[in-house]
Amino acid sequence: MADSGDFDVIIIGAGAAGLMCAATAGQRRRRVLVLDHAAELGEKIRISGGGRCNFTNLETRPERFLSNNPHFCKSALSRYTPQDFISLLARHDIPWHEKTLGQLFCDRSARDIVHMLLKETAAAGVVIRLETRIATVRNLEDGFAVETGNGVYTSEKLVIATGGPSIPKVGASGFGYDIARQFGLKVVPPRPALVPLTFDESMMALIKPLAGVAVDPVVISCNGATFREALLFTHRGLSGPAILQISSFWSEGSALTATLYRC
Image 1 (cartoon, rainbow, N blue to C red):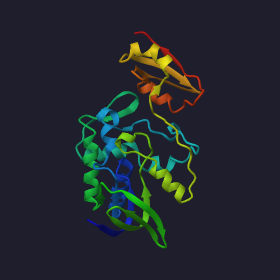
Image 2 (image 1 turned 180 degrees about the horizontal axis):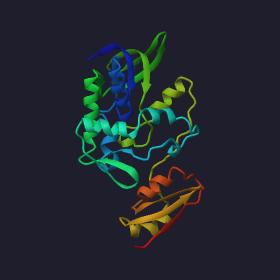
Image 3 (image 1 turned 90 degrees about the vertical axis):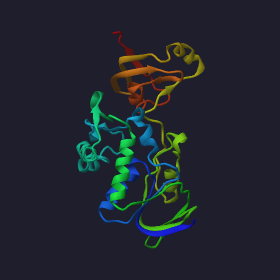
Image 4 (image 1 turned 90 degrees about the horizontal axis):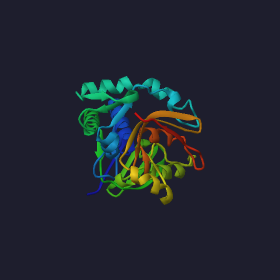
C-alpha cells in the first residue's frame, strides 16, 4: 500500500541513535517519521553486550573519544551525561549492574532498552515505518524528499542515523556514507574499530589449540595505547575486552605487544 506524508523531521535509521533522536524531537513537538529497511528495529541494540546491552560507561569523558577533531564530542557529552541515561532507565524500572571499568549492562536483556525507546517514541507521537527501502533522497527548496518503495515523504529536516557497515548480517551498510557523498560532504575512510583480531593460517596453527581459553588480566599495547583487561583466544584469532580496545589503535604494519600473567 502506498504511503506519503509531510513531517518536520525524517530520521533514516531505527537504531539507538535514530530512536533517541526521534524521541527527543517528538518531545519538542516536532512531527517525526523514522524509516528503516529492517523488519525489527534496534538490531544492534539486541546483540550488544552479549545480549545485555552495554548501554553506557561511568567514565565517559571527551578525552576518551578517538577523533580527528578531539573537541567534537564535548558539547554533546556535557549536555547529556551517563547519569541522564541512567535516570531514563530508572523511569522505566530497568535494572542494571556495573561490570569492570565503569561498564553498565542490563540485568535482564538488551530488549529492555529497545522497549524503553519504543515507549519514549510512542509517547512523543513518533511515526515508525519498518521494512521500508529508500530509493532516493533529494533536496527541495524548503527541505527534503525521501522516496521509498512505499511512497514519498517530505520534511524540513533530515537526519541520517544509519551507522556504518560494521555488522552486515543485521542489515548494516554504507548507506549513510553514500548519502553524505551525494550531498558533497567529506567522508573519512572508515576502518574497523572495537573488533576482534584475526590471523592468517600460519599464525592460526599456533592459536587454534588455545581456542576458548581466557586470560585475565593481560596488558596489551599498540601505538602508544595500553590496556589491562581480559583476552580470549578464539577459533579465528584474539578477542576479549583487551583486544576490542586496542583494535581502535592498531593499523596495518603496527606491532602489538601483549603481556600475559599467570594467576
